[in-house]
Length: 180
Image (cartoon, rainbow, N blue to C red; front, top):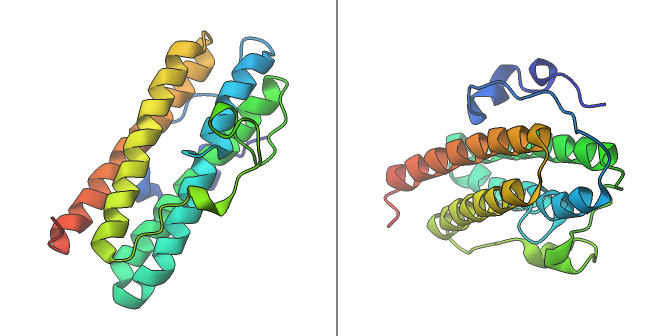
């Protein structure tokens, strides 16, 4: 289902991902409870779907201010789209349905735009972007503990590496723009 990593992350977007390869997308066996856990990473309050929309929203404003910063937000959003695709494939392999909804964080309700951290200034938006990555990492770490499938654990650990890389990239921009 999911295209090979090199098909998806070649060219200009590769620098927005950590350099390590992604593990093969696989599961030990179908498990709807694990699929439901991943729904929060997929389209919950703190999720890849929320991150994509937040980063694109910020990208639109940054495009007016600074092309380099706008490119960063677009590039990170593309990597988050790849994560979304990986999670969708895992959810399907686990026997779930990757509709655009969360799990526990939304009580199974569909995603909505109130989950986005909009912000009013460039610095506030970068702070919100960093916070989103930090919270996503925390959630992935909890889910690694809850899911006893080494294939899924390896994939989530690899996604965490990208999220950590995004924090570094956002912090560099905060320094460049002299944000506190």
